[in-house]
Image 1: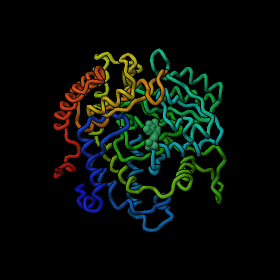
Image 2: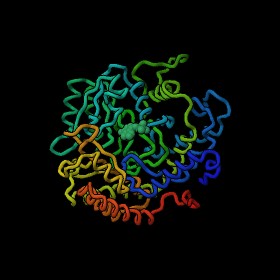
Image 3: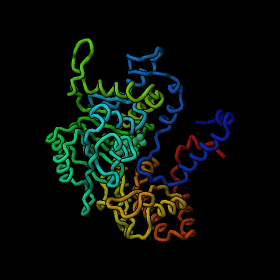
Image 4: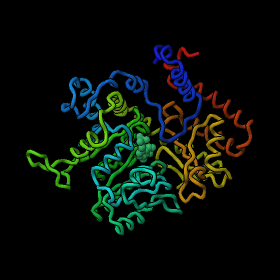
Length: 438
Ligand code: PLP
């Protein structure tokens, strides 16, 4: 990525891109949903696959000239299936996690139907029933929560709500929940009330395929994910099923009368239902990322992501921080700042000035407004990609403590920023892109 052509064609966008590259290189990226994909993935995102319209699926497109994009999409599908324990159904075309989720709603249930999902303010995602999202506007949502005592998902409450409200679908998965999921227990509840069980593993997919977290594939009717978080690929979404099955809605193929598979319904929900042409450069980059994730080195990476999150979490607890649920099983943690007399927004801003990038986040049973929040969400995937190990994450905990203990002190922030500069120099990000820059 020399970007010499861009530099001449559009100096302003060139400068913004270099600024962003330097920001990523100079700061400590602790946002749990972000990662640094390989240079091969980045290169694929900027190539001519972008130019091709390929509505439809491999071997069955609306347009001619799809022979090479078919190769890319078939590789992405085959690799994804292998990665996800031999999944029978894969759709790699969703432009984002939200669009993968939209396809699930539009295929499996009808507007007005009842759905059960994790409360947004307890770690859930916008697309799991938030009032400002299509999901909350179109469907009748009931939310289960985490228990006040231990910050863990209250499965008994989920069961009670399911029995009472008879949802057509139950969603599991989260954006800010640091514990693993009991998929068989949720499947039991879903079966008891005749609901579909859908897992959204957007955050945890990379750890799941590496065998570092429980596997939802045998237990859920459908699974969705993003490809850019722990999976470390390009931005995008994906839909999977461990086993495809006959649709229970009586939808048949027009000529033969054959009952269509759920996978066929999902495919036609993505295109022509909610999307047009797939982003073939992204699909190709997904294939590249899946190849990387199939390599044994990815398991080493996933183990380190978990070890680093644990090290950061334990060190923060050692500095007197309160962590929701008392720890982490995965790549992230939610810090409850209430004992530190600082809100999430103030903490995020102070850390930002010290070159530590985080996001403020509501904690369960939060007493602050969603604009301020009482929490911070921290994650280890991006810095683990940079090569950080437990000792670096312990240092990060020390710096977070120094900044948050004295948020008005510019001197502390300056000192921490200087120390971070020394550390990041030892772990250059995208060195081949940085080379040659003044
Ligand atoms: N689902 C979960 C659990 C997420 O955390 C996210 C993103 O943060 C999404 C879905 C949506 O993904 P995207 O931003 O690609 O639409």
